Image 1 (cartoon, rainbow, N blue to C red):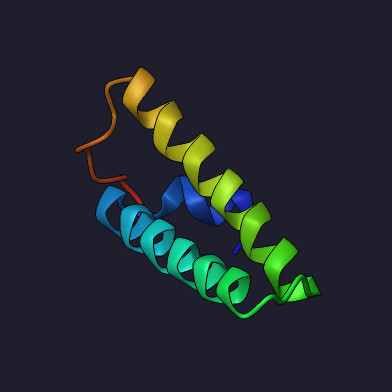
Image 2: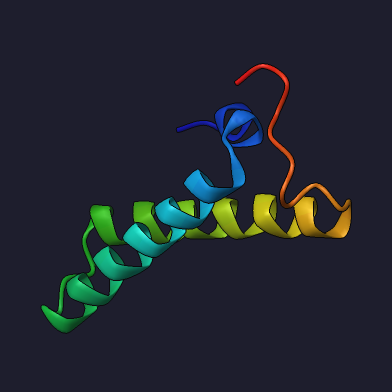
Length: 68
C-alpha cells in the first residue's frame, strides 16, 4: 500500500493495519527472523504511524475521506 492509499484509507482501517503489522513484526522477532519481510513491515508501521499522527494533529482522526 502506497502513501497515497494510506491518505485515502479510513482511520479505523489504518488502526487495524497498524495492529496487524505490529503483530506480524512481533511474531517475526519471536522467531528470530530479520528477513526482508520484517524490514518491509517495520517500514509500513512507520508510514502508518506517520499518517495516524498527521490526522490526529490536523483533527482528522475521526473524519471519513470524501473519496472513500
